[in-house]
Amino acid sequence: MNKINLRPVITVEDKNTFIGEIQEAFQDSYVSEFGKFEKTILPTEDIEESFHTKGSEAYIAEIDGERIGGTIIVIDDQTGYNSLHLLYVRLGAQNAGNGFKIWKAIEELHPETRMWETHTPYYDKRNIHFYVNRCGFKIVEFFNPKHKDPHQIGETAGNIPKENNYFFRFEKEMR
Image (cartoon, rainbow, N blue to C red):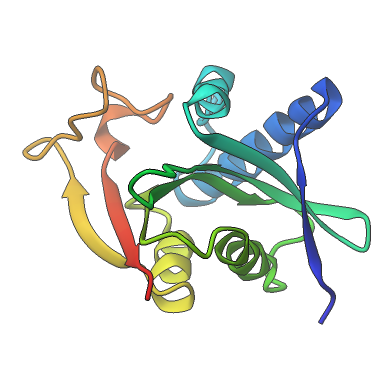
């Protein structure tokens, strides 16, 4: 098994590559489920917000120098309650266990973590399987019109249409 390297996103080129690849991967996932959609599902502003969140760390994931994906995590050194904001495997590198490799590298990078939290849309069955069955997260909350995400402003998350704007919140307690 080739070792994964999480390389910090430090250049403008790295950041632009990250944004383009994650948007392509998320768009592909949405289109696979619902068909052609004109808007970008994950707007650049939302990605930028994750880049600029206090405690954020952004990485390009590489194996043997080849980019396979990336992640933005948010670390709280005081509490040990950390967040996985974004994780993607670029198109062409999917279905090869690379998402799991990225996740394990994140866990190794922050062994002091007491709890990880992340979110994913309800329609992305692959992500739900990935987080629950592969990574060991538990679904702890379901956001929907009757139980809104208190951190979400407005009626949509990014450009996801209102009728598809349902999300799961996951947690993983570390031992």
